[in-house]
Length: 367
Image (tube, rainbow, N blue to C red):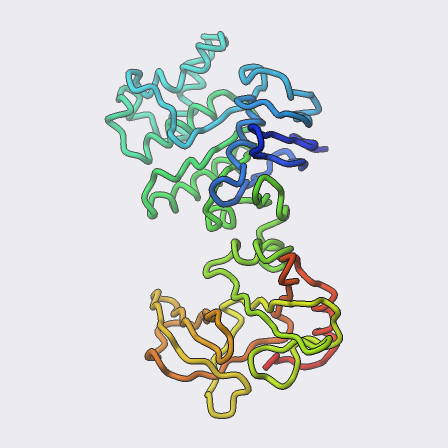
């Protein structure tokens, strides 16, 4: 049974539709990331669950109770804001206890709850400091501690790590995930960073223009993208998308005489390839060759940006370690047939029926 369930949530400001028919459920104790680009509606969705925004239509159920029209204070959930929302004139101790005092909870439990959360969040030596005397990571821990001390089972987080530097974000990702698992929290986490979503979440809800583009596990979104948008949003670098040209019902890549797809009625297809699935070979006898435009050495790997003859879009190839390749060099490219993705160019949707035709052959290498 779901811990949180949204049914047909719609929200608009005039002609601007922020959320369009949003429905999903969240299992108790799970970590769900609301992922998407700026302006896709993810923060509006979180604020609607919290009661800070009212949906125009649809319902929100939490623990089998309809909370759609309840004020935020009666929803029994916690929220961590992007700005942390700490009171600058209050000490860490008073920031942590503020919500308990405001709700009129039992004062005899304050000391025990404060001691537990302070130890859990490594804040005990900082209780008498003001927020201005804390680092960004310490302020983030206070904001998290304020959510934990409330003893609510549902916690909402709105891009809580966006104000931190890259190294601190990485460590805080691990801390938040460990805390969520330790406490058994049900956590909804808004982010525009696909690395955060992939590394932390049990499930990802990818939003686009106020609608759910795909909902699934990180593995499902990465290996079974439902559309071009998902394929290029999930993964770093983004999936290579190469347009195919058609002759009748056959679809070809570049100058190759053998079609990538045979007997497909879709008027226009695009071929999707992950950078790590492409292998480089000697160019002399390769069916498909490319010219190196540039390379990025990342330490453990090198990203090669290559240009195929007759294809406008460049192709990114990921190879291990340092690849001593200079700009202008010619390389042969090939990839496993089973690692090809096909998308309907006009709609952007995954074309599974066309992919099934690829697997009917026994070729292990596509080109």
